[in-house]
Image (cartoon, rainbow, N blue to C red; front, side, top):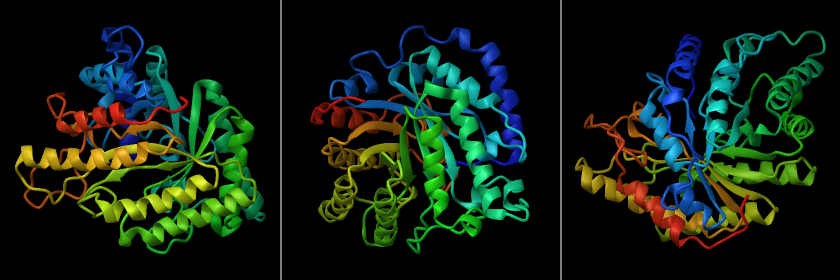
Length: 385
């Protein structure tokens, strides 16, 4: 979900390159997430895999922090760059690519044996396009130029990394949560809804080995019904047209002050949510948790009480998700509270810092971490990825 300004992107490239040169030799050796009691180790016993994004938020970059890198190596078997593979980071202009930041993160993950996910080949929301793309001149044959530009971007990224990336969020958030329809962008104005078909086709041709994902933040409850219906409508059309989408990416920014406003996950929420997941899996799609964290915007100020409520919601939600054998991938959207994209978004009225991640500001495990672990221990076994 996080996005960066152009100035932040450039500054990050310098900081990330410096970290790569000065800090990586100090990182622990050995394969990542190998310990049986690590989150990835617990996940592996059930055919699941656990990982996290790495990169940064608006004010700081988690990769620069050796304690965050150590947690990644200790707990994770997968890594996804948080912002570094998005258009706004890769494309300074219509003719150039800058892979500096992405290369460093991917090399770090590979050094420690992590599987790499790609996020995202098309974040189909004008709000997060690079400025040049918002005003791009598509010329006298705009449909042809829009398709050329999109295919060139996807092919260039996928070809660069080849089999090093095992799964891509090909399209991210194209459904408007309020209307259930596709978002209006410079691509849809020239290509209509075929922009999504083109994106998946280009990814399939350039990365035939990869699991291709449609990723979105739909959630449960009556206020999200339109969003869920719109996603199902899109997926049904893609499947009918033999578009090569393999997986529904369920972002899973759950809890108040994340991407939904429901401060609970109970029987009513479970019913709505399972009905949605049942329809998606009935289309033959796999599931992936791609961006997990838990908002606590309106929960009590008391840390112990709040952490328990967050953990309880996470446990209920993950238990429901793990009941689907089509789910094998679980990605946290950050391991440590102070680097979470949620820390400075939708702030609490009392001004207290939000605590959406498995580890606190001092890198200590929280009840949320144990809830994730317990859900892994209780999960039915399945075939691994």
